[in-house]
Length: 135
Image 1 (cartoon, one colour):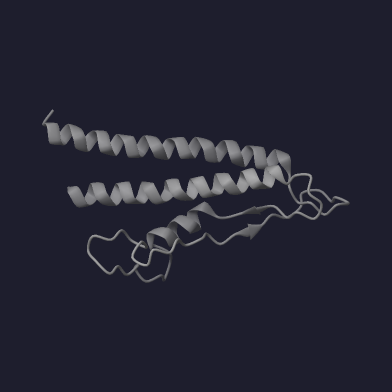
Image 2 (cartoon, one colour):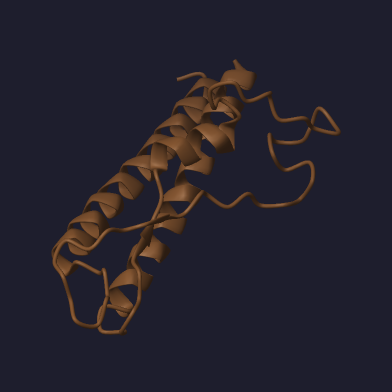
């Protein structure tokens, strides 16, 4: 039971970290909407989560140096998601590829999913505390 809770919290924790990183990246795109030549960046959340949890197709499981280490934390290095370039939805004279409508929609969507991930974590912890209390 404890391993299941730990795995669930670890999974959601990694998802939360990736959601936070994606929010930062989208905010950077929005901040550079008027920067000539700026190319908007994003990443595939699903692919990044598979890589972070070691479940990418054909990927070997992440090695740890101790049973107490969380997957990927053994080396202390934080893996960055593979950043992709956004293609321009309209041609611009300044070659800036930031589409504010797309960025706002991505920002709102990611914020809602970030909140949902927090609720999953809170629900898992609350369930475990209720089980410990015996209620």
